[in-house]
Length: 207
Length: 254
Image (cartoon, rainbow over all chains, first blue to last red; front, side):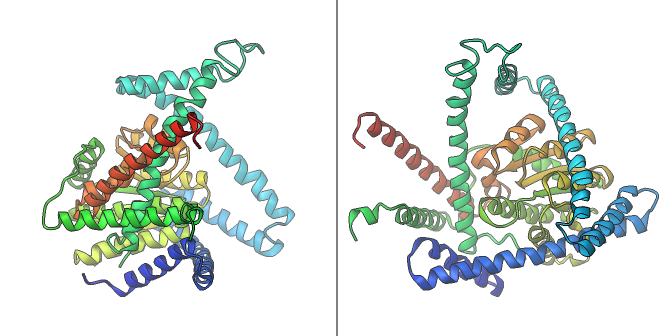
């Protein structure tokens, strides 16, 4: 098997980091910590590259058709202003925090509110489009957990709500069992994928 | 080394990794030269192939969303799977006029997405199709990522969205946008809340380890099918271990 240089480097570094977690040899542990710190540093540099890319994409979109891409110019102006304020006054200054608390937070909270509407609509659409048994169980469980989630008129109904009720039974037994089953699958899939990358069988990068 | 050392979590972990690796290598060697097809059928992958075909015919674009998980920790593996999907999809859709676009919410993943696309086109000798804006970062927080991804779906003639990476419940906004334009969504994630939202909002959601089987279904090389076989065996081992542990605890033996 012909292994490109970049892949060989990735494999070697991955193997050293993995062994550093399992084998108590001081040099391996030191190397592991150094490599992980390098990775964090590189990811920070990559974030800057990503932001530059974001600006380039929106500048291209805006310059190609200014009338059709109003959001791109909003993004560019907002980015420029935020960069100026955070660069001049500092990222934890009063003005920077004002931007965060009065612009970014409300916008993200609005999106969260929209998400609630989207999810309700999706459940209704699911009921219409996919009326199979699994979907019906999913919808029934969602409705049951929502309805029993809060006491009705301030009174918890025995047998339905509170400890020992249907809601806590669903939340503590079938839901936890299902979640653990899924997590075991995710864990095994994660290890398998990591090992394939480590032996160079998978190269989800340019190598 | 005494028994307590042997049974420590670290050594058990190392043993588990060695056995896993041994099984993958063993099954790969056994399956070499044979065309291996995963035994279980996952309809989402048939749908993905159809979506790619339809996208190519209709001159529309595929959108691959890698989420905002980055490359470190468990979310990193989710991103790597997403990149792997991107590479294979770029190759399959290479005859299309409109190459796929990849969005991510983290810098390193964005850089790798461009690298992945470039490598896919280089392998196909179609480097002229590569444009650096095809792999882009659309936001750095979960909701800003979703907000930045929506214009890609609405404005860039997208016919299918493939979500593969670490996202939260905001994935609902992305899948809803795809449905609104009449597109197909195929979704997978390592995050449980995201999986619940995906199940409710998309036609095809990959739940649990199905997401990690993408490589075997899209491009069944022996190592991918071997990896699935190893996972199946170890799943039974882990499940049996949990059951035996529960029984031993129940009878007061541990």
